[in-house]
Amino acid sequence: MWQNFKQLLWQWRGVWITAPSVTAMVIALRLSGWLQPWEQASLDQYFRWRLPEPTDDRIVIVGIDELDLKKAKKWPISDSQLAQLLNKIQAQQPRAIGLDIYRDLPVEPGHAELLKVLQNTPNLIGIELINEEDNSAAVAPPPVLEQLGQIGVNNVMEDGDGKLRRGYLSMTKNDQLLPSLSMFLAGLYLEEQGIFPEPMETDPQVFQWGKAVFRPLKSNDGGYVNVDSGDYQILLNYRGPAGSFTTVSMSEVLEEKIPAELMRDRIVLIGATAPSLNDFLYTPYSSTHITTPERTAGVEIHANIISHILAAVLEGRPTIKTWS
Image 1 (cartoon, rainbow, N blue to C red):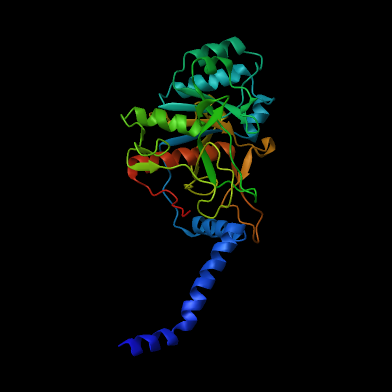
Image 2 (cartoon, rainbow, N blue to C red):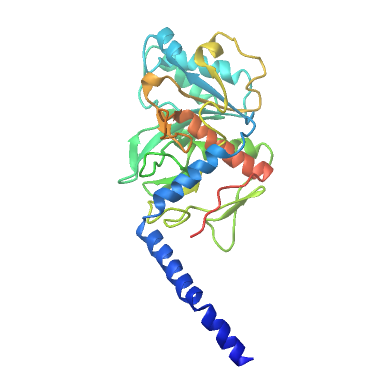
């Protein structure tokens, strides 16, 4: 028996030597970062090849497009126009409203009118941009909404190739933990159904939220090597390419050219979709071959993060799993 075993070992000696060597080489290549572009490209290809997913009808985008800019005759739009837009949206009784437009300074005419609307819209969440170098405010939030605690962070994190594959759930500013715009809006939506995140006893950074378990991305998770994993980031499971969400223009809302129930009990996001405003980002759907890479409006990026959260929490939609 022992002779047979020795003979078997001798016959397979090449495998015993080669397999560990190949494994060691792959590990070394990965730790050096050489495999990161290929692993990211594989993830991108996965998104582009998978079957189209249904539109998430829990989210509606109000885009400010080129025609809206032409009618408004200025950018940013005036406080008066913004107040009118918010009133029209609130009249449809949405569950939450996200204002993905910086509003740290008055834009006359109509500032007093806008202040009144902001003070009386408890389901409205504004934004601020955090300076990631020192965790201070890069663009301040609307003062009224900040006083009311109705602010979310709208920072995004691009990879080295300029594509957005990660999303923030929260960030820290001056030692204060702030939710992202997407996290805040998803939370408001889920609160109506009595669903709240619950930290795990074993690790408070890991939390159960409905049918989903959320874990922060680590610096060497998935295809990443020593990536900046500060604050609370997740790998984003996109709903689809640009144009995957129900979108209406600001003019259509102001002129009441949309269905009366379109926004009821939904999350409404307001943001720029006009190409001239250049609020667009590259995603895994931005092919770099043959055609010009397609970009996605920033407001739709937030819609994707919200959809990721809601679908995972309510339906158990799989998140992007990684290996460390």
